[in-house]
Length: 150
Image 1: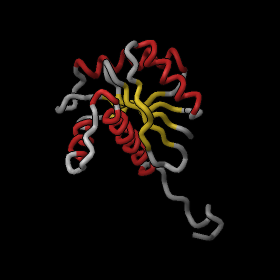
Image 2: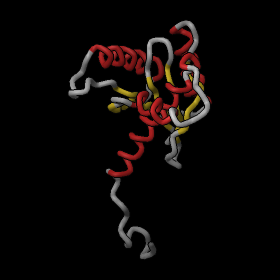
Image 3: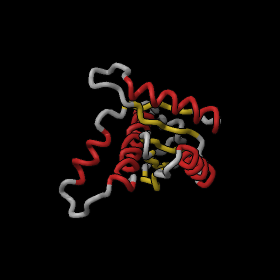
């Protein structure tokens, strides 16, 4: 199963990739000037990485309610569902970009916000959270299912 993680933003869309190994890695963000070109960039990533499912960060309010930004993401999800026809999962992304920025404070390398690198790292965090949640909900096979070996 190949996944595309998305951290949506009006100007930049962070992207990340994971496959059956289960490690999310940032991809080049969709930072083109027009929405049409950003969607084209996403389409190219979907084709190049043979994506099966999309995992999209969902910016709930701190109290867990759906606010203005989450409603904007709903519109985006509706659009990419129509365009790509892939299953899309929403993942609570509260503080994902903030977590990336805090993690970078100790590094000497300063990231340019406009590059989309922070957004793609946030997409990787969102995608990794999804993968780990899936793994926690998948029961371990019994010794019998493993042919008596474990």
